[in-house]
Image (cartoon, rainbow, N blue to C red; front, side):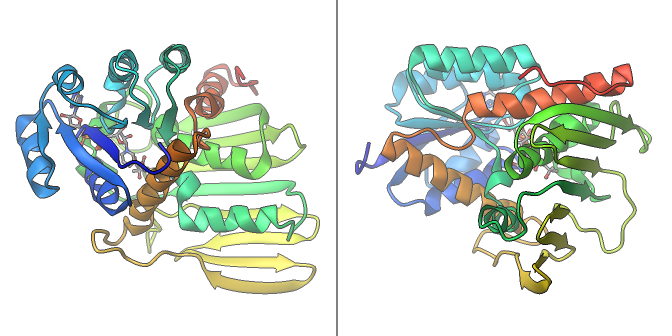
Length: 343
Ligand code: NAD
Ligand code: 89V
């Protein structure tokens, strides 16, 4: 696949998929040849707005009619497993949005299905590819503060996420599965794998089925302690949505991500402050622009790895380790004790 143009399809043309579609248009060597949404109006709008020749309301019909180098599944999680299994039957490499699936068993099954089919499977976990969070990772990897021993990764907002994503209000598991999954993944990146999770959830906003706040204490195998706290019901002014604010400490210094994505690094007594934010792209807008740009970075990473024939960072298998933290957090909250993740 090194140089040939890649024929791509997107399944799911809803709210967040618009960013996927814009991003595919920007990536060199990728041709978006088909879109599919079971809502015909959405499928047609995507085909028209992004000049896509193939327009489908049934994924099976699309796979039967199209020759694809990969498929980008941007539906909500209940349909991830059947769509992944369908793509695997057609031996088409897959990127699938987070959360991977509603259950651990679904996730494990999809990883096994794609392994048996011999096709790459990546979870679109784009906090890995957010510019500010990559900047923090780079500082850590340079050893600027030494091996980190403490962290707090915090995503607290009162932004109305339900306006664009109304299904969130009815989820049986809300903030850890929808948002915590991103921040827990970054805790793994910054501090390594996790020994135990201790979690307390809270339900603050009326009218929601599930938890909208969670506070998690991670004990990492490295000995580091990391607090991951997430909230959809905070009253903050200004509201930092969709910024992940953080503080990380090591033997040589610290890293702080402050509101407005100002990164402050202290190393051996010297402190520097830089702007870790991202410029607007023609199709991005405040306040989502950093998240939107991360979609482009994530998808470029997928294409680069597919061409090179190497596994991407967020393979289905890797995402199992993050998903295991999600299930451990829910178990910890239910059993009021620290829980070791399943892997
Ligand atoms: P949405 O409901 O707006 O869009 C999903 C679309 O998929 C709908 O148009 C629906 O008709 C279509 N669809 C569902 N099942 C289908 C099927 N079997 N075949 C064809 N089309 C099908 O949802 P959304 O808010 O865009 O979220 C989609 C996913 O993206 C969710 O898993 C969500 O968690 C994730 N998301 C990720 C980020 C991020 O990457 N940072 C941000 C927001 C949402
Ligand atoms: O990024 C996401 O997955 C969205 C959020 C509201 C957290 O941005 O659901």
